Length: 602
Image: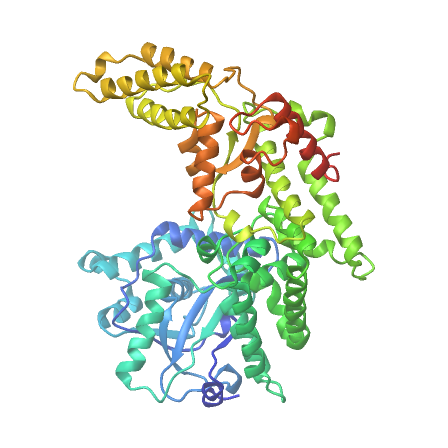
């Protein structure tokens, strides 16, 4: 396929190119800075290539992005010396050029690099590349960095080795570099319909994204280019069909409810990790084939590239099938909720996909898959029913995080029992914390702003429980609270001491019939966002109840079970005390928790 044909198809060309097969004249345009790699950068490249040689494996450098100048053909047409605008990759190609030059200068090789570099605004740099005169290195910032890189290459090949070993190392290095080391060649389609100025503006925009904005080419972009390039070479060109399907998958994954359950990320944070949402599917397919202990850049592209080259149609079928599977799960609230919980708990999505196919390559039935999901949740939770009430808020290493997970699961399972989809799109992306349902004491409050807030909200709580029998005492305490507020706000606020606040707060709690003894078990815990939790800290049940209802009224997301707790939904009818959280309430609550979580407690 010629470059002209590729342009008509509206796509770019992408493939792996060995270093020894790079040909052409590379033009570095004016919008780019000069060569700036440090000695450390050069050392890293040499070490990485040599390590891959020692391990006898291929090694891929990061992409080189080029645009043809003039009507030049693709690599398939075997053009000897095409002209390329070098949009990204100047530092890498220049360093490789210096390595070739050093080997020629040492007479280890006859020829230098099989390509040239020239510069729009720095013609002297091209000349300096030929001499690398140390006497001129300090006269120009480009010359300085070029000379520094050359000296690091010389040091790497010669230090600690005699002449024989140096040449042996160079021969081994050269053979591996030219045949086994490759670059990801990303050839941007030229646009002959654009004016020279418009073409330049297009190149600058791409260069800015890749360099100034520090946004490299993504695995998804590279895979899409490789896929469409392979498709266009086939007699039945399905490139437009596949491109449309690709965009359709991307649109589906941009639906917040779908994206939240499958990625565990909200819409905004998802863009940071996955600039293109289809990347999640591609990463999953790559992990099925080869899951590394540590991920390197372009792992997904490097892993899937061979599948595309061998049979692009089969590869694309796998992508479409995975998308269809996700959409199928999304339609089933029970499956959706269980998968969403596991993903929110950082269980890899690829692991869940693997669970959906047993070793015999027979997809388990819906009921079988649900059982597998419940088993996986049970394995993740690792809490026995007998130990449930022993988990403590104060145990930061195990108790606290387990209580967080159990209360989230309680909310998820409540949705499942009601045949509802849990709102992962509202839940993920927030920081969640444990809220004490039963009042804590106010001893930890030591700032005037905290005292004022506590007094304001607890005065409202007293108004909610006032009756004929206690009206006189409550009115007296409210009067004292008003006086305390005035004293704190007065110029001599320092005269109002923590001892005075402690004495008054104790009277308020006594009037509200509140026991100061803290309860840090799950019987006294609810889930709340950290931001909202900070507003409720050290408040009695009635204060919290009023605030929860207000949050709900203004449309803020409050987990279903948290709302139920403060509405006394779990309490027995004959034990209803709307303004207090009693031992009877706790007993009813823990009974509900055990019932809802019985399938998950080991």
